[in-house]
Image 1 (cartoon, rainbow, N blue to C red):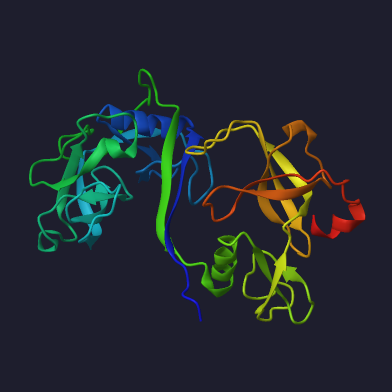
Image 2 (spheres, one colour):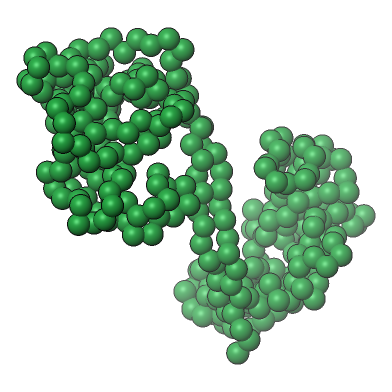
Length: 322
């Protein structure tokens, strides 16, 4: 049994979203060291604010300012912070009900040890030195034994004060980076597939029941649900079954746009795989185009596929692979 492959894998992309009036006011307020919530029709104050009442589904826009101090309602200790987390030393994840609020906000608490954290602990916001209008403008919470901080109707009433939500240069959109770091193992079938690519061969597996050849192999037939282990070499040539024209340049990908990415049914395969189409102007790529792989020196997989010069395949030859 050959050794199974495994390698670190990172999936990373920026997530861009626009903000409605409620979230815009909330994040802009953080930039100005002001924590805003929203008041529901029954008088509850929700922090962080939402745009629709979670009970009635009514739209809610009544903004209120709450305190920068609050009480821990529950917590969990994080002994080994990971990349991108609020603190690089051990800390507690806490739910904090800010003074004047009826719900709790999730954030980090800077504490010397787990023994220093408890439900009911009084805390306050530690503001980031540089604030841009994001939840990270709250650097973390810290233990606090002083008086309440924030604007209230009375000195100790704990009632939130109405707020217009108007700020200069309001934040109207955010870009949130998303990233997953993990170790991926392709398993027996795809390990064999990848090892074959190193020898410039494409290998699939045939289902013992329906006799279809799947490339890349999954180790089991998705139609019949039975294990597959009969290896079948396919290609190297194939047929473009469908395709798209890419006009957005991807990060860390040194390919000029526009370019074409397509589904390619290799000869002998019953499942189309993905591949970039090159060696032809993007506006001349078409369904049925016959292509072959172009391997880079030392590469473990085809860099792209190019036209073979053969006549286009008849539609009936690949219509079941669309």
